[in-house]
Amino acid sequence: MATYKQPCIHCNTLLDRDARFCPACGNVSPFGWACPACLRAADRGQTLCAGCGRALYIPCPHCGGRTFAGARCDACGRTLTVACLNKRCGAQQFFENQNCTACGKKLKK
Image 1 (cartoon, rainbow, N blue to C red):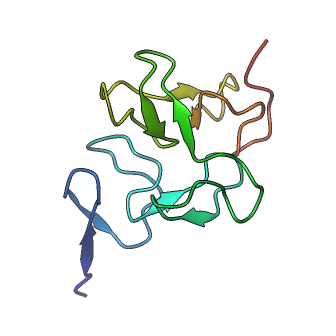
Image 2: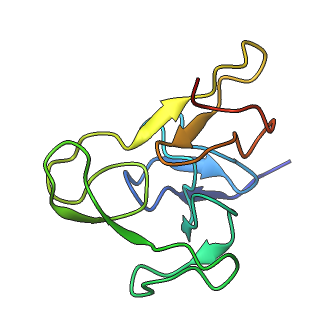
Image 3: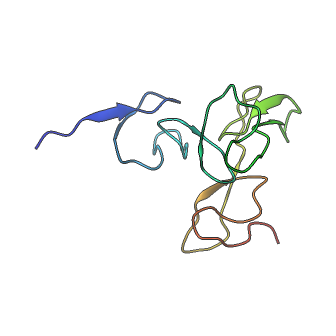
């Protein structure tokens, strides 16, 4: 049975349409942008999330440049994610999140 693949918007790797992350670039939203706090779909032009009101443009913790709240900084390219501390989960989460969006565990000690 033939399956149609869709390119990741970040690295153009072809992925199954039901993929939740890109194994090539590690992005957790391979087919669109999402709010890192509530995971609602967002556009790069929006300044606030329509779902939870979170600011979608922040200063990068590494370079201080203004960046979209995604997986990587627009200015320096460094990652903006941390791994969940839950050994069974380990999902990549936005560095400012208080709880993991996958399992709910607290991210910061």
